[in-house]
Image (cartoon, rainbow, N blue to C red; front, side, top):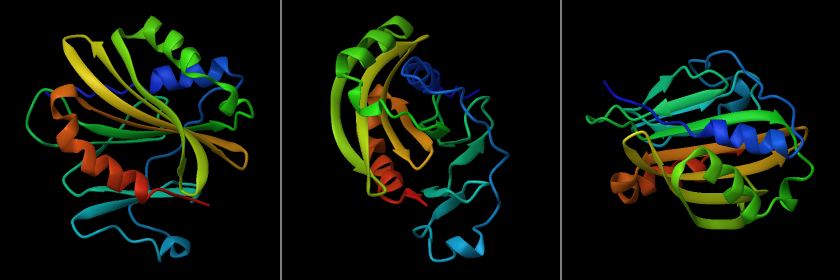
Amino acid sequence: MKRIVLVTLAAVLLLACAGCGPAASSPAPSPSPSPSQAAVKAPDGWNLYESADGNYSFSYPGDWKTVDVTGVEIAVASSAPGDFATNFNVVTQEADPTLFTITADDFESIYKSMFANFTLLEFKKTTVADVDAVLLSYTAGQDTLNVQAVQYFFNKGDKGYVLTFTADQKEFAGAQADLDKIVAGFTVK
């Protein structure tokens, strides 16, 4: 059976420590885009997800499946054979006005307490959907797996977003193109 390692617990904990409220949970994804998102199209062979409230959308590989995970608004995971499913998930909650005061040391301190063999690979300011964001990239041991993850943290209006992409460390380089395409196509209203 495939295992899906989702590191959003750390993201939720980190943002809660930085002053955010509890993570919001939303209904299951809508099966098709609403008329307001009709201009947003998935690339050939990819699926389009639009949040139930219509606030954001993204495309993901056509052979990936949606997965129900408590505390995560949407999770999609690879259906490729193997013990670990490469996955992408979104958590939304109240916007955190202190987001850009959080340092690499803050992230590292929290994550090291949660994951074995945590190594911070990159911490930088970037943009997602034309919004200022913080990118955090790291490796960590979890159970018998060694994973690599990239997380994007950003605020838009009154919502805070955490986008997390996780893959087996040995397969991350091969999955990087999917991550880049998902994030490049992520839109927020």
